[in-house]
Length: 486
Length: 119
Image 1 (tube, helix red, strand yellow):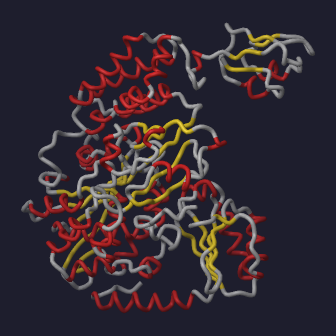
Image 2 (cartoon, chains in turn orange, green):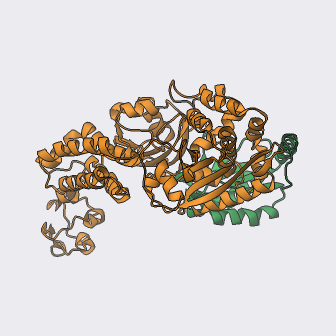
Image 3 (tube, chains in turn red, purple):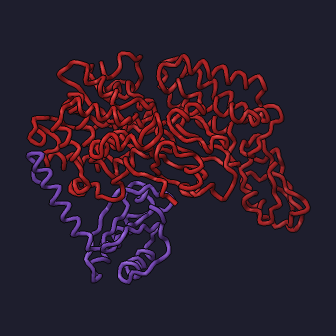
């Protein structure tokens, strides 16, 4: 059932004791570092470029190219940063890697340090991941004791050590310039690029920032060769991607599949299908920065380019599956609520624009929308996208644009007929008791927290629509299916 | 662990550990997923249970606390590898099932319910 999976980043997760370095070494741990240290820096970068590995944090920038840029900048002091500020709702692949195989990230950071000429690395990790932090600390102490971090690693004269920096859970700090600001003790706000971190990063020094999953791939690439890695995946996207399957799917969890796997394979073969065998409606990839894929995308091979073409993005790999009961306007509203909360407020388009988008969506889901609002949504989205400072604002309207694109009918129904076909928007639905079916048991009346239901025992009951708060308690309690949602 | 002084030392150490892990294949190996998600679904109790019950069994064994296999839908998960066999993953393990894994699967090699296929 899950044979479509190929585990590279998650190769050791669940198979080794993350708190025992010997277990990692038994899986050829630190062999990649040893191999790199016997060759030239250029050779390491060449291998990375040849492998075709691209940033797994979402952007998809070629990792080898990134290293080459950082290596080319002159400077005595450089830094390697591991971005473990995983913030997409529903994504937890980085946590799983850090909790299951922390040494692979440490090893890859040392490899990166050697390649770009850095002797210091930091892992920027959210404080909400206490277990990951604990295991990283144990792993770092063990690696130091074994002489795999610190001065004169493996007698080669290469020095590299790693420290931890804690994030307070701000979504924008996943953006590399904001992350660096936060590490320096400043407000986590992004700055204009260029200069790129490779030129002027942490403490003004050349810095290379990669995501956890990107690093986790690297020891395997070095050990097995660039050609091996490049043989997996599609033309432009090599290797595998870890997805966090969540939402209305039977087997929620982490899966790692070759790039180019289709959504259908992910949801139906690996995920086991839709919960309660309902109808698939959409899948949101890329979290609040991404968009939704619909039925027509089910057989599209998933890679960086195809997702972009479909109006979404890879993001960090969160994949939230939605069924017929999910209202797409409400989904867009959920993500905008998140972005409004997480916008750092530095630039106007993102700070104010997203608020406007949220208010418009709120108006629509409350049955007060007009057709004109749909045009406004689109206009504002485009302005925010083109005028925002960083990746957060440039992508935050994506959920709106993509749902508008794919589910315009639903939006239109909300504003014209004041109808929510998924029966999700509370302001647009009514709970009604069918008189013919009501037996007068009184279960609904007892369940109602708003005392909106009247009726004597063994007589037909009635819901007072004025008082009804649409919580659905009566609907769930009724054993005779006498209550319907309209 | 002693400091590894050179790349050759690392190779020697890796070989030593690998030889030991081949020897370990003669034992029953039990991996209990202990990531945040697993612990939240109660794997801590299962881990303790195996640690307490396995020494009473007439078999040689190793118990490992590992990260997770990504099977959130079936946590807590336990992976058991019998000597010279392929690993078998059990999902949604509670104490009752843990008992059955020890009595039926480990001691008698019987197949029991709760196996997650295709890992």
